[in-house]
Image (cartoon, rainbow, N blue to C red):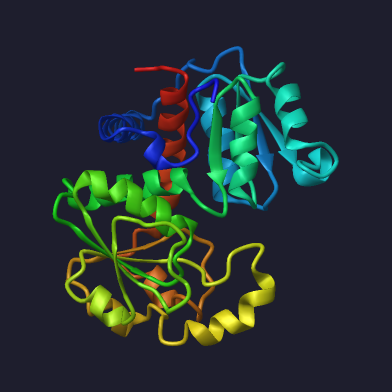
Length: 293
């Protein structure tokens, strides 16, 4: 990689991770706007539809003085109309950085390999670092120091879980994931896997879930509903956690599947704090990649 990239949170050292989170908290508290990206355009490539990721990256680039350039798959044809390498070599001549929301993680790796500008993972099938940074920020707001915190994950061993595990471990939090057999993460992660959602949730400081069927997996939806039966985070399951426990979800939620509406709108739900913090996490990540301190 010729430029400093952020393809997952393990591209950051523990000290860099703490620095980035501290910067995100500081900017949120101050309503920070800056000029770190002044005079540059950032390409925002979206193979997948998005609300939070598109809005927060667009605003983050703007509030740091840059110009966001939205490029969708219909127009770019990433890897179809043009090879990923060619797209990268073109964009590096025009923009100061690239953020890409893609189906395949390999697409990001190719962009990073061939573009001599920073590349940010705005979501791939393997990782979702900006979401994990916002999650850690939200947990710090709720609990302060995360050392010794028990976080329960209920559901698919997906990209969100993978990045969450990598960001929580350096901060000293424990992650226990209730995952149906056959849906475990593809890579070895710093977490404990169990089969019973109640075993994961009991005594937890926070309960986190995500959709059972991600974009690109629609043909598996019916099978996944069967395989994930009993993994819905409803009020009864949430109450197995500590009385002070927070609820997390990266959204969008499929009410009646992985979670019930009453849990998302529970007084201890932090899901909209997470969504808000996506903006501050994105700003901190962009500042970090251009060397701002």
